[in-house]
Structure formats: structure tokens, C-alpha cells
Length: 225
Picture 1: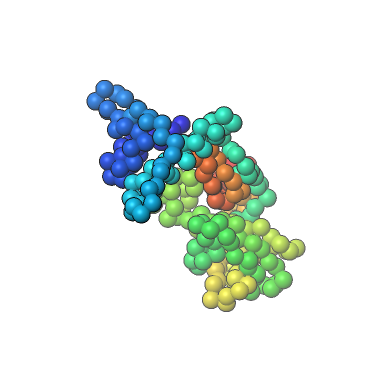
Picture 2: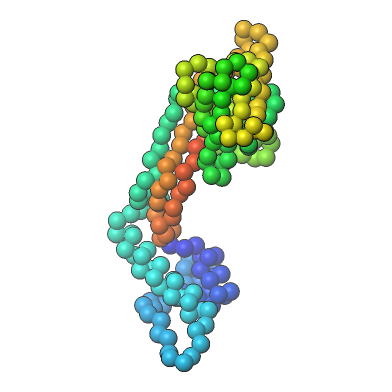
């Protein structure tokens, strides 16, 4: 799939990239006619214009797009991007603590933590979180919940306990306290499930687009999503 009609018209009218004619949208034309330029020639002693540099990019991109379509369909995975389902994660209901201190969704990196209240040898790696605010801000790919949960994987034998306090191994200022159970049916720690995608490259709209590694919560309270 090539660049959209709106994108092409923007390149043409605002950046003077005339590889394509402006599409006639009143007649339902999706793309302007390609002028099929293959080279931009620069004359000695003359200044280079921004439109020439912009069009040079378009010419090269069009060549790559034509080559890419011989091997890939729009949306195909080129390399990497492996999906991994994890049904061995654990979740803990957090009473106090800032979840974003333990996991950065932009970088997909989580903290390594240990239990300060019971046994400092109990350690885990935080792999995601889900909060009561997620759905309030329109995050549709995270399950709705009225509580805050940290998802983690134990790296040692032993488990965290109700009311326990965990701390980032690198900063004593980053802590969180787990909730205390109110009864047999009130579980603070449960099995959870996540799915992650590795870094990779996809063929999208004629571009070879890098996808960053990411992980989402499928179900914070069950390992059978």
C-alpha cells in the first residue's frame, strides 16, 4: 500500500514534492499521476533547494517500495517481531506506590525489586502494571480494573506476602506496599498473563518500519486469557 492521498497532497502542496501530481479528489482519484522521476541533477555553483532534497528522498523511497512489494505484502513482518505469550507471570495488588516508577511503558523496561519487610532474598523483575486509571484515560488495550497491580516474575525461590514492601534494588526511594487480604476470597497475589513482541521490522505503506519491543497485559488476574 502506497502513501495515502492526503500525505501525497501534503508533500506536494507544502513541500513542493512533485513526484506525484496532486490527486483530483473531486473525481474520486486516489493518487496523482506518477511523473516517474529517477534522478535529481545538481548543477555546480547553484544552491540546492529544499524541494530537491525532499524529492530525492521520494525517488529513493519509491525504488525501495517497488523492491519491497516483490517480497512482502503491506503489514508483513520482515524480521524479528516475535510474539511471546507468558502465562507464568504473577500480579500483586498495590496499596501504595507509584506504578510508573517500576515499569516504563515507553521503553518497555521494568525494575528489579526485593522484599524489604519479610525476607530480602525474595526478588522479582517487574514486567508491566495495570491501574484503575488506565481505562479512565482511554487505554483500550489494557483490561479494566478498579485496583492497581504490578505484574512481575520471581527470580528467586519464595513469594511476596500480604502487606509486604518491595523496593527497587538501585534506589531506596522507589517502594511500593502490597495490599492486605481481608479474607480467604480476597487474593492479593494471583496468576497473570501477558503478551510481548520483540523488536523487529514490518513492511508498512511501502516503508520498512521498525517496531519497538513492547508488552501488554492480557489478564491481570488469570493465566488463561
